[in-house]
Amino acid sequence: MINSPIKAHLLWTDDEIDLLRPYILFLEQKGYLVDTANNGDDAIANVKTKNYDLILLDENMPGLSGIQVLDEIKKINPMVPVIMVTKSEEENIMDQAIGSKIADYLIKPVNPNQILLAIKKNIDNKRLIAEKTTHSYQIEFNKLTSEISMANSFESWKQVYKSLVYWEIELGKNNENTMDEVLKMQKTEANNAFSKYIKSNYIKWFDQKSTDKPLMSPSIFKQKVYPLLDQGKQVFVILIDNLRLDHWRLIEEKIHDIYNVVEDEVYCSILPTCTQYSRNAMFAGLMPSEIDKLFPDIWLNDDEEGGKNMYEEELLKKQHTRSGRSETLFYSKILNNRDGKHLVESFSDILKFKLGVLVFNFVDTLSHSRTEMDMIRELAEDESAYRSLSISWFEHSPLLDLIRLLSENDITIVLTTDHGAIRVDKPVKIIGDRQTTTNLRYKQGKNLNYPAREVFEITDPAKVYLPKSTLSSTYVFACNNDFLAYPNNYNYYVKYYRNTFQHGGVSLEEMLIPIVTLSPKK
Image 1 (cartoon, rainbow, N blue to C red):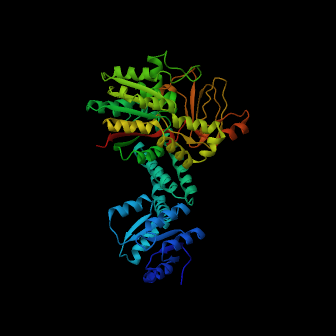
Image 2 (cartoon, rainbow, N blue to C red; image 1 turned 135 degrees about the horizontal axis):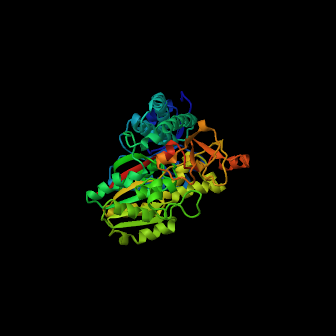
Image 3 (cartoon, rainbow, N blue to C red; image 1 turned 30 degrees about the horizontal axis):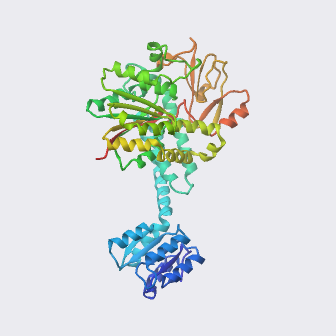
């Protein structure tokens, strides 16, 4: 008799099923409904007429063997988990069962608790993990809230953001959404506090006397790449445009078998957190105003026509020479899968270079496509879906093939990005003239009109080494999940851009980005 609500409907097939009656009573008392069969034909007939949550199947029976029955069951219902129960410990039997996609394998004699554990592991596994994860986050919630309120250094903000990303991924692994809104509110709270921290400290970091300045875009090669070359390593830098910390955490799972993580760091993108500024600064080893001063033919201001990232290779080579490096250097920008496949096919040609720098633009392209294409909006409707789409690309991309080849050739990888992105939601009105930049997360111009309390304003760009289009240029950055909207066609503008992924402003997602050193597994 079942004393509790039915947890699952089971089928147990064994030619000695009558001897298993005590086991069946035990499972029924635990809340499971158990059907029985004492031969393979009856088991197959049952599976044709009923939906089972799990099947226990004896391997050695008269008539159809357990393996034969398993094959027939999988033809009828390929998704039902089957636990094989057998007296045999022969390896070939195990191999056949595993090859037929059994969920578990138990060797007789078994006790009731072994059976119960195997059932729970295969039926309740996701539910139990989800409940445990939710409970653990509930316990950590107050601690994390306290850490957010007390964060007063870049190091402390790194730890806060790493914790938020951890919980976002863990909670996203289960189908329960009970804590989604709570975590979303906590991230918003963290971004509000982080924006205040940036407003108070960002300009100070560029004071010569500053001791709290974090690792930033212009120092990446000097501090993270060149020391590896000095150790005699062959190094490839892989920059995935717009890669966030949560994306890297999932990529890490995909390359775990081929690369060891030697150093897993977070660095700070300069403002504006967009390719023209942050990537050029990284490759040049200079801040934007320094690039503008030293190489006026290369730097283009926001209001000037032309591509803003056409000279990455040239800037990279200039930094390489300026730093006294003599290593051979290879650079390539991969804009689509065709470019990536060509790179993989010509891999032997790039092996002769001591330093390779590769830029992959897919994630950035995805974020822009999500804004412009309804289909991509639907496929990446929230943070979890955005991550899933990005990782799906990575799993099937030439980049993963390239990483495997790099590992086989004992090449160290520095994997990083130039900036992240945040899903924007709240519009902030701003007024400017025709020369004002069009980016949603930052504006550069003169005579800008905006609510000063809701943005981060830099009225003297020279203090943070940003170039000025005019003598009175001001930079204004959106904070948290805000975006800057003009009053003209305001409602259309807001509807079009709300819930899109943007970059250029101040947020944890845009500024705190991964830089990882990977060593090939031997």
